[in-house]
Every structure is written in structure tokens, then in C-alpha cells.
Image (cartoon, rainbow, N blue to C red; front, side, top):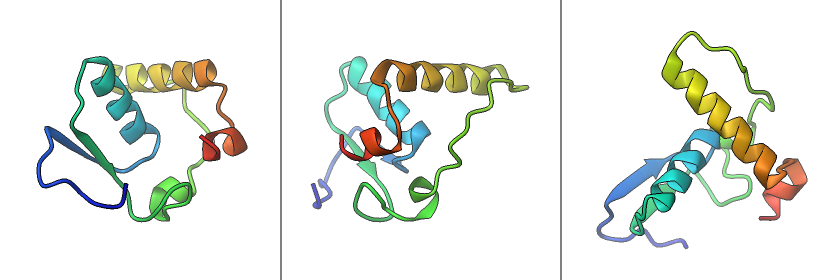
Length: 89
């Protein structure tokens, strides 16, 4: 989708691991009018999304960040994502 709707319940900026995870969870909660935007077209939009660090730190000093990291890791395991698999989805 290249057109941005005039209205949305939520707009998430950044299609990286955090943005995608957030949209995924909103969809699980029943949200249907969510917009996810990034700098350019997928699968290589440029910016931070296009050159992710390819690692996740399982230790974090903030409980919220630890839970986000743990959840993201579980999602990647469940989806069996890799660089090529993720780009083709």
C-alpha cells in the first residue's frame, strides 16, 4: 500500500523489529485500522530498518525492555525468520 489513509487509530513509525511487533500485538487485540510506515519501500526501506544489527540482547536492565526483547525473540523463533525468509514474506 503506497497511499496513507486520512485516518487511523494508530500510526506506527518504523517497520523494524519493534514496529512490526507492536503492529502484530495490536492486530491480535483486534485493531484493524493501524498504519505502519517507514522511510521507503520494503524489504529495504533504508534507515535503521534496512540495516538491522542482527542480534538481540537477552539481558536488559529495564523490565519492559527485557520483556519486549524476550517477546520479539519468541516471535522470530515461531516465525522461523531469517534474512531471506523475512524479506520474502
